[in-house]
Amino acid sequence: MSKKQKTLAVHAGSRLTGSKAVPVAPPVFPAAVNWFDSSEDLSDALDGKDFAYARISAPNASLLEEAVAALEGAEACVAYASGMAALRSVFDAQAWRPGDRLVMPADGYGVTRLLYKNLCARLGVELHALLLTDAQAPARIRELRPRMVLAESITNPLLRVPDLRALSHACGDAGAVFVVDATFPSPHGQRALSLGADYAVQSTSKWLNGHSDALGGTVSGSQARMAPLRAARILAGDVLGPFEAWLTLRGLRTLPVRMKAHAEHAAHVARRLEGSALLDRVIYPGLPSHPDHAVARELLEGGFGPMVAFEIKGGGRPEGDRFLEALRICKPGPSLGDVGTLVMHAASASARRMTPEEREAAGIRESLIRVSVGLEDPDDVADDLLQAVAKGARP
Image 1 (spheres, rainbow, N blue to C red):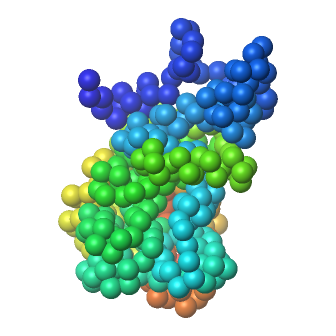
Image 2 (cartoon, one colour):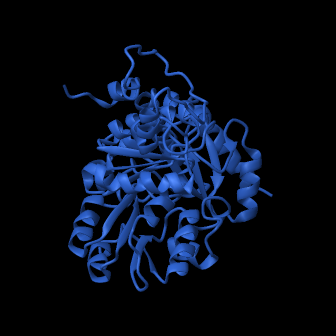
Image 3 (cartoon, rainbow, N blue to C red):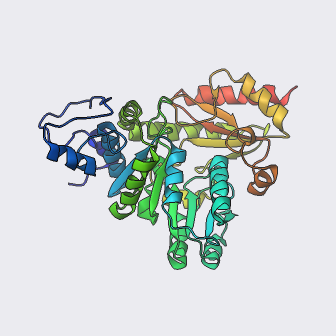
């Protein structure tokens, strides 16, 4: 029987095999080590057929992996201690050789850019940062023939929406592995694997958890692609702890309901902000003024998402700092995905690890503010943002 996202979110990852008892809320399994009466059973467990040692596999992480795989429409999922560990694992899984090429978004998350830049430099791999929403991006991928292409479903922080189908076709023609960081829309908003991705990456610290109380990351895909990731994780040790896995699974239960409300609130806030004369532009995929609005309508199945960005007219770092300090309901915070609204100055937070030249090439200006719209009354959020913009604009 086909199950829809709301049903999968509530019920997937509910029971461990080998027991007839199914707790309504899965317990936390804090034990790092398990023992067995039978030496044969212990040997099987050390081969991954049961839970022997938490670095190999653990109950709470396994339940979360099952649930995320169901939401992503994937055969399998591997959970990690953070989203960055998940991105690192995908990079390490490729058989890199000196002279190989990697393509990633020029306007994406700055820390991912720095991670891959460092790894590529170490291995002699060429890194090509492209604006993947550009009409020529697929042709450029075919020309470069990279070993791997990383895209973001919605770029961080400029909220551009690339055509993943077109990029996937280009990757297929070029023989490239296609990786999509789909954190911003979450699996509720977009199933990247169904659009041609080989790997779908989530920073579960964001929308999947939804409450800013647990770090984590996941990679989802086919069994064949996940098997080497799981084997490598045993050696790397970047496992997700039981409490973090439990908290993330608890948050995941309400993901579709939360994401629907977050997106509705974000759309309302964006429309309110569009009327302000103190802003140069408001960026939200659901607005007809957004450059990728047509692509977003086609590929973002669960709405236009909870993220809004805007540029303060004539703003720079001083105006951005005054704006953040003037907030009363929204909180200045360097993350997203919480039930409360989180706001950040993009150049000094998500793009902090990019060079000034990289930020300029990406179009990330000092006037750019990114907002993760929460579950407060959206008019309260909009009022707070607008009063803070007014105070920030006046020294």
